[in-house]
Amino acid sequence: MTEGQGMGDTVRWGVLATGGIAAAFTAELQAMPDAEVVAVASRTDASARAFAERFGIPRAYGDWGALAGDEDVDVVYVATPHSAHRTAAGLCLEAGKAVLCEKAFTLNTAEAEELVTLARGRGLFLMEAMWMYCNPVIRRLTELVRDGAIGEVRTVQADFGLAGPFTADHRLRDPAVGGGALLDLGVYPVSFAHLLLGEPDVVQAHALLSDEGVDLNTGMLLGWESGASALLSCSIVADTPMTASVTGSTGRIDLPRGFFHPDRFVLHREGREPEEYASGIDRHSLRHEAAEVVRCLRAGATESPLVPLDGSLAVMRTLDAVRDRIGVRYPGELVAMPA
Image 1 (cartoon, one colour):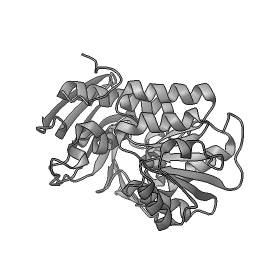
Image 2: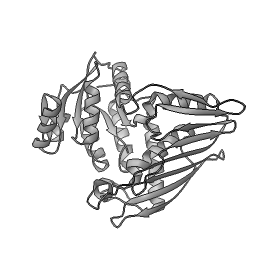
Image 3: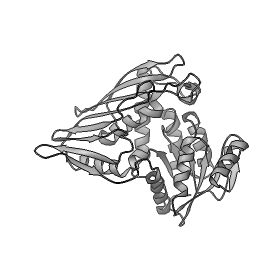
Image 4: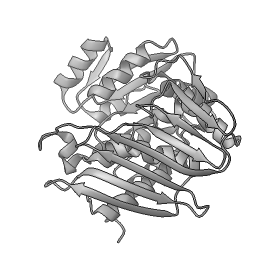
């Protein structure tokens, strides 16, 4: 879809990949009145056909290029491993398709910049699938912070850790697909801090690495010239609280376990009783993210104000800096990490 060109009443989706997140997102799309899943692609015909039969999708392709070239597809949801995001999303953009690409956006900043340049050069919609940013509770929290409800932001804390255990052959332990805690889980705490404070001026990190060379347990300390700081962590060897908080000069907001898809938060302000904001939303729903894509496409927009591309690039720069500090490299990256 070219810039300025709106979308019809129903947005037609193609799904590229057939894993768990692709299945969850497809189920959400099929429950929306203004979305239709018309095609799916995988690396094999068998996988694509099985997925299509499971969800009643009319067309199944055993190669990504066929999906990219399907004229009935308006937008493609890319749900491959991180290592394939650049190739898969780039293939679709080159074919003139709008793209929603899973997080982490790519393996590194260089790949992300290529996608953004391609999308902007062709006037095509591109968005990272950061569902946290589209969550109504997170949006309300952000509004309160920006309106000064807790004063000037001083600290952000967030963690996301799973105990596993994940065996050596699990994708989270495989450097070839961008494994490790950082890109799968750490992207959430980092993105939360970016949402509230922007790109940090200082990045420090420490990690426990696996024999395969991916990060198992990573701690990050980010700093801003304002004096604000963020203490973040991610892990695939520890079941962490998975909570988050933002503290300002006059108050604090606490998010419960599962901070990246909340249905509530508690606002603490000086001289007042704690105030709970409860939304009543289905906290597990990916529909808010899908609805934002549909809204943008109908409006002829090429970027989402909720998940701007410059923000995705900034997060990738921070993730790159963390990997540089902890010594994690992935095979097949476009460029070497900065020294």
